Amino acid sequence: MCGIVGFTGPQQAAPVLLEGLKRLEYRGYDSAGIAVESGGKIRTEKCSGYLENLVKMTDGGKAIPGNCGIGHTRWATHGAPTVTNAHPHISNDGHFAVVHNGIIENYAQLREELTAKGFIFYSETDTEVVVHLLDMYYTGDLKRAVMKTVARLEGSYALGVLCDEKPGELIAVKNASPLILGVGAGENFFASDVTALIGHTRTVIYLEDGEFASLTPDKITVYDPAGREISKPLSQVMWNTEAAEKGGYEHFMLKEIMEQPRALKATIEPRVKNGEIVLEGFQFGSDQLKEINQIVITACGSAYHAGYVGRYIMEELCRIPTRAELASELRYSKPIIDERTLLIVISQSGETADTIAALKECKSLGARTLAIVNVVGSTVAKLADSVLYTWAGPEIAVATTKGYTTQIAVLELLAVYIARQLGRLEDKRYKQLVRGICALPERCQRAIDLNRRVEKLAGKHYKKTSLFYIGRNLDYAVAMEASLKLKEISYAHSEAYAAGELKHGTIALIDENQLVVALACYNALFDKLVSNVKEVKARGAQVLALARESQRRIFAEADQVLLVPETDELLMPIPEIVPLQLFAYYVAKAKGCDIDKPKNLAKSVTVE
Ligand code: G6P
Image 1 (cartoon, rainbow, N blue to C red):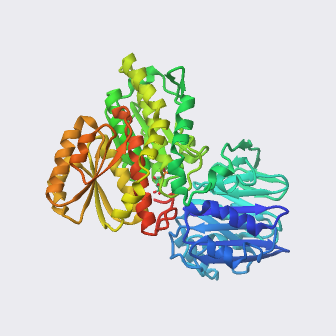
Image 2 (cartoon, rainbow, N blue to C red; image 1 turned 30 degrees about the horizontal axis):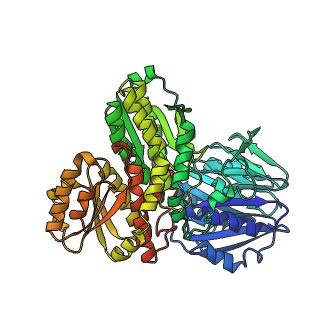
Image 3 (tube, rainbow, N blue to C red; image 1 turned 135 degrees about the vertical axis):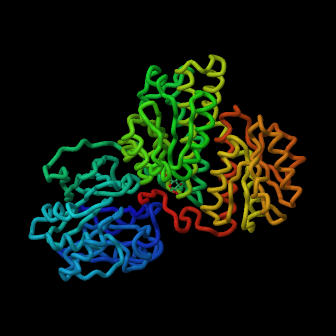
């Protein structure tokens, strides 16, 4: 939700800022802006729409000279995505510019107070109060003005501040929104995410909530909330620039789909040693695991869908009652959770507001907490008792693919590990599952190779305005994700339905205009699913089935078939989602949609 960047150094700032924003566009892309200080004067350029407009307006940044600046790419919360509402916001006297990611919850009171004092507001944003507060409190001491301003703010904010009286200096403030400092040689940076920094430096400082920093080309000084200088460790980012680029693919989404075998290898390989699952970072021994009487998995969006897959596998293998809950519901549901609950929180970004809130709520009730996260050093990773990273590399496309499959891989490793620790998996089955997990990168590659004709199939169906994805058990869990993939990038209405439930109402919608995607990989319920296929076919629907390579019977039932390579029943979801990711991608492409930047969405959702 909004990306911010800052740069100070010997180079021209604007091109560096624009390049950084390009990498943060996945966080929001409805308007953008930069402010650059030069010779004690701040100049701002803003635009509505994509960042590309700003790049053109400023001739790639050349039109705005200066060596120190801040930038913003927006996902609107308060006020429409207009030029006026775009950041940076400027103080009435033009001395300050501010970029902000997050929400200032008490902005209405502050706005009233500042208006009464004579400050003029131009935008509808919550952010504009920050720049006026700075102006009000500034008496020559920038650090003091920042502290006084921050003391008035409630909510979440990562802020970047530029002051024309402090040439070459940037202030960065973090509270409940991500912000990372990049340490360069004679140049320094801040950004919402490491992907905006890795083209320049891999040495970073992770700020904690409440901390703030002053950056000049040669120095970074970090302060605690009381304003005391503190020393912070330098961390090295393992991701490289290539990982955050399209590498010849037309879209990040396609690149990330194709990257899944490699990403899964990175997730799985280091965790299987001599045929045994080794989960460094998982700090519960078998005695503690024996005390667990329920597992609650919580997350949002696709991460929740991964959790839904995990729920079936966990319960089946560990024989512990397991449920998956949407974080936005769990946080307000007065959940029955105590120290005998293992809470598993899943998040690619580690910054999703609802997920963080659910984690905090369950922690306060005594749950033991484990996070499955991709972004190192993120809020979820810091808050949980234990962390298992997915190590999927940066994911840029808003619609997650490798993020989702690597989350499932971790859940599978975890389920098998816990079941083993509890003595609920005999040797033979344990070895079989471990071998199956180790083969997943190759199975995933085969799923890609088997489905080279998905584009053609998508060409047949891309005009459909309504689709149903049906399945049972794990197939149903995968259907939820497949349906979301399609709707978020192609804007077709689509619903995932437990196949056995169709007849209780929804079948009323089935007619010859519907495409029903039937997921038929879960062998134990194959025949039941076939009955549901017959029911929808009898009502005129076209059926596109998804089945195991060896399951030839499906050809007699469905109009078209997508094949999935064989693997263990419980490990099927990873290869199974691949053709459906490709289907969604090619449907969206045939419709001419902006696949990496679907309308109204953002990758990292840091608001409620
Ligand atoms: C957004 C993204 C989804 C993602 C969800 C949860 O809605 O568009 O792709 O699944 O947030 O994000 P997280 O970072 O917590 O996995």
